[in-house]
Structure formats: structure tokens, C-alpha cells
Image 1 (cartoon, rainbow, N blue to C red):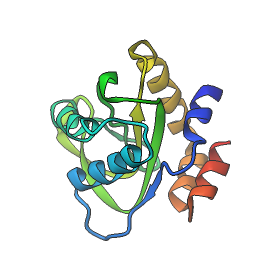
Image 2: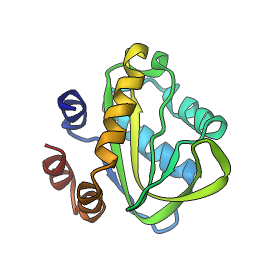
Image 3: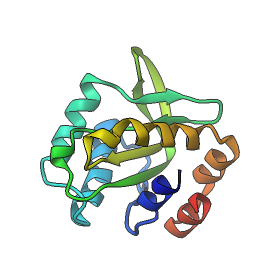
Image 4: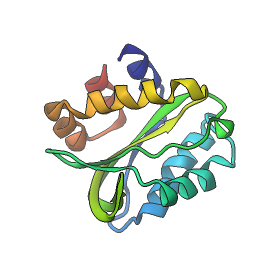
Length: 153
């Protein structure tokens, strides 16, 4: 899990919604733009992540909040990282493995994985983090990037 924390600890990768009504596409674009502007991903990352989310939804209903873990092929990634989106008003994603089920998402863990063989390991580490209910509640209530990074440290 320490590698996961190291990936998240980088600056400028936490997104807090500034608007009340973001849809899934807008949210993916805003978080993806943050990764692009900071040099973690190529310009092809944003359309690729939207396309993959449409074909293979990543929403998860958990005991605390709805969570999404969007990701796409490593060919769109320059440097591995994980961006976190904290939204005050839930954004509807489709549930992983059950596209007809809607998930009101409050936390997004957008994965930018450089090495394809690390995708499963990274997903498992994120799932392990998600299972910590107290940490998930605290993340949703975090006020700024420093608070998010401190919670994950």
C-alpha cells in the first residue's frame, strides 16, 4: 500500500468540484485535465478514459459513499499517479459489472498506470483503501488537497 500512497502524495492531483451540477463526462474531463496540465498523461488520456468508462463502468456502491475508479490503457500515461476527485454533490456513474445500476459517486480515484502489469496490483491497493470506512468518510469531508494528502499518508 505504500506505493499507492506514494503515487497519491504528488501535488496538484486532488480535485474538488467547484460547480453543483457536474455530470460524469465533465468530472472525468476536469480530473483528466488536471493530470494532463501537470504532465502525468498525454492529451489522448481524456478521450480514452471517457471511452473506457462508457464501455466498462467503474462505479462501486460501498457502505459509505459511491466511488469510481476510472482508468485506461497505459499508452496514454507519461508518469504513473492517482488523481482524487472529491465531489460535494454526487455524480452518477454506472456500477462496475452491472451497467443498469446507477451509483451516486462522491469520490473518484482516477488511475494513470504506466506499467500494464501493475494495474491489478494498483486496483487491489485502491480497493483496500476504499474498505477503510473511516478514511472514506474523512476524505469526503476534507476541505483541501493538504487534508486529503494527510489522510492518505
